[in-house]
Length: 324
Image 1 (cartoon, rainbow, N blue to C red):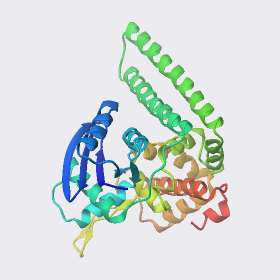
Image 2: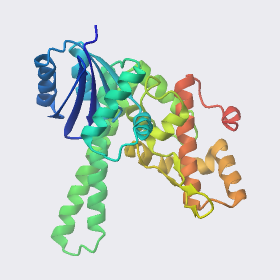
Image 3: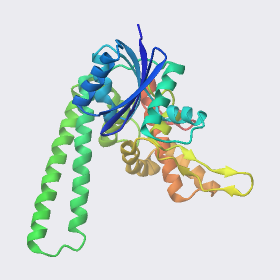
Image 4: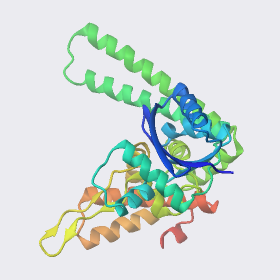
């Protein structure tokens, strides 16, 4: 039996909760940490709420901790596409944008649409996500130190220390990439999905690992359009009458890690993937898009192909992809 509905706006450090029970709405903030998760569960008990339907946006690693804690405590948990909450919030016509207001919108969305329950990821899937987080940090550090060394550093001692640091990051990158590959190889489901992704021209081991870690499953993303919106690659156009027609940009409201990981593979796919080559040629022939916009279109197409093979469970077929 469900005693209440709980909307949680998740960020890196905080959880803003909005709960409705017995015709009353209560709000409170907690730390996004194991202690904060326990405090939220204790708060539900003090409010005499035995079982809630909790709803959160899919924010990758930031939402998994509290979602798992609620699930283990016997509560119903739903994780939804942030784009759906954003569109729902627009219908409310509110002018305020705060974490507390966002939590209320998530709660109201849950009350109205009753999204499907979420299933916790497997141990291998969780490990893959944590390893990808470590990899992202190592890559950021490696890039930072390479840029520092190439920014005019002339002192021999400083250069030597920079070289040692770069060597350390390079070694750690190799170690974490080996651990990622082993995690995927040792899990039949991840291995099968990785092989499906690798069947797409332009997708390598690195992008396949990021997609498996960052892209939610069909319980959250029901279509390729939702996957595109989740990654922030959906176009946003501002047009009004005949006087306002601004340049179309992507929304960038979505998973930045996955969006960044698509860039270099899309550049490769623009040369080697027949479906994306055809798309690029078609867009160039129209002469309306800039080179940068064409690259974004290629990224979007590559993501759609990734979503397609994972959803159908069938390897990439260039003949079918030419028409999607």
